[in-house]
Image (cartoon, rainbow, N blue to C red; front, side, top):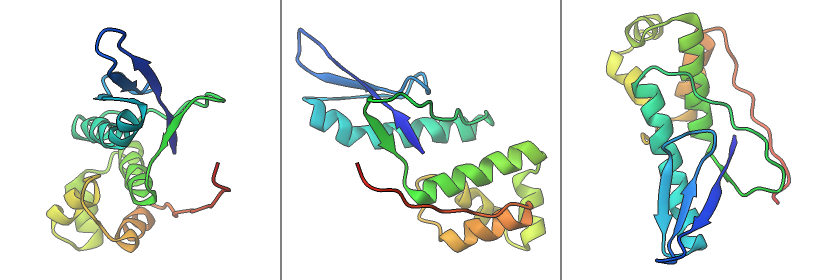
Length: 141
């Protein structure tokens, strides 16, 4: 998942703001473009975590050819897929925990984008929802 990012330089301060058109409110700043882009992934993950916390649908990244983008780590993508599968099927965290035979806190951690869950745990949870995880690789730009 690659979310396009818009970089805007403040003419007065010279600071650069990174904003995500697909996620209003996902913003960060840096002293220059490099620093703004270095902070952009954290801002993106924080915004997506807010969507999960509030039970909202995760906006799909738009394709904007030629625009800078921030790529999410594979584990975060898998966790977002799990969250969306739960939303579509109206499965609560408690219901998924029961289905998996685990403590509900484990499911909470599987949906925490900052928690270093194991990929196989996310994959097992997806399977319990009738989903399978598909990973692909592409040439680096």
